[in-house]
Image (cartoon, rainbow, N blue to C red; front, side):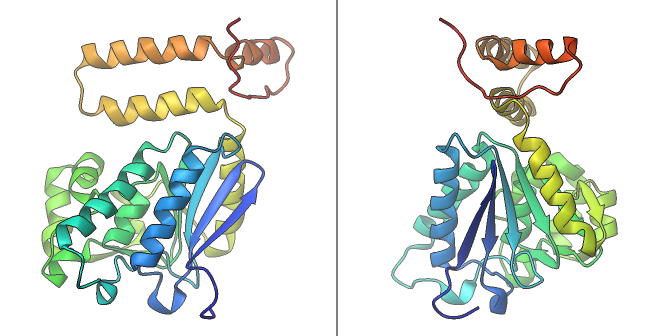
Length: 263
């Protein structure tokens, strides 16, 4: 990476937007410049109807070594900085399109939680993971304290957080922290095909499903059923549901647009 290269690379292929952390000499550790670029890119993606899926990746054989603590600004109060970073975590979590973390190499600290904040994690056998915070005298951030117990249960979450061990891709997959484990030379093809499949889906219905599942983990069944009813009503107002039925009857694949169909 040269000094004039952007710290965040963007690439569009159809409806799939790929955001690549581009600080390979620091294993893509996120400094203030990269935090800002990532936050802006996620905000833009959430407001772009042409973006149907987002892939997060890292350059140079690593996903992300976490926050770059060496680059902290002395004039910024730590709490103000954390509030700014928290907004980025919320943007990722609430993005109305499916998100995929493409992990090769290390994903530690906030870098691992950046991956876990995505809807899917695709990793390779070279991937390594750690909630490294305790080794740095710090506690979990970027949503780790919320994500880990939901994904692995309280005891395993405490193990990962308190011991701050480095675990390999096989163990992360067994724990449910990796959705798919693929060979390194298959990673690009697998993620590209996954992105295409997600981008081809009904955008409104996928957004509703994602929000329902994210919110449902903290709600009663009564609350969840009420939310499902509201979401389904929104789906019925798009062209996608009748398009899917017509495609089924005609034995072809549907084309989803998310267009509002109520006249």
